[in-house]
Amino acid sequence: MILLGLSIGHRDRARDTVFFESTRALGVGRAMTISTTYPLGAAAIAAVFLDEPVTVPIAVGSLVTLAGLVIIVAPWAERAPEERFWLGVGAAALASLAWAVSTVLVKPPRPR
Image (tube, rainbow, N blue to C red; front, side, top):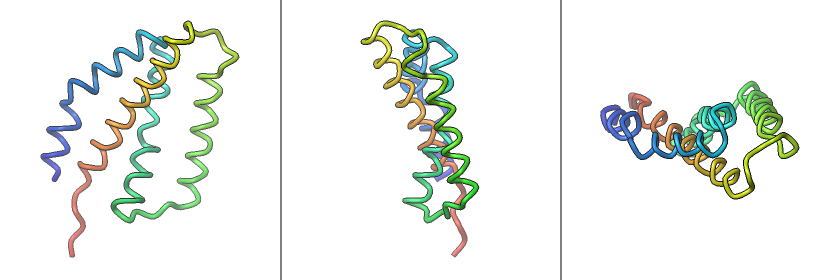
């Protein structure tokens, strides 16, 4: 499972292409901010599929992270034209999801 995660997740050119497209649409600051929210996705995927616990610190940290994301990618801030903005947000979110999946796939299995 670890080898599968490494080979799919960390060497996925499509994921990197999507991320680079998001940087062209949003700029590096916003695209990187959205893309690096992948630990939130990884925590959610692990909670659902691997029965990982969602503790209070994880929940509070997730809310703080999402609040920071809203402030950085805020609709009131100067941004690209509308069609490029939402394309960039979608591409960055897709890259974040790909990173989250690859992170969960790298988790070593629990002994039974």
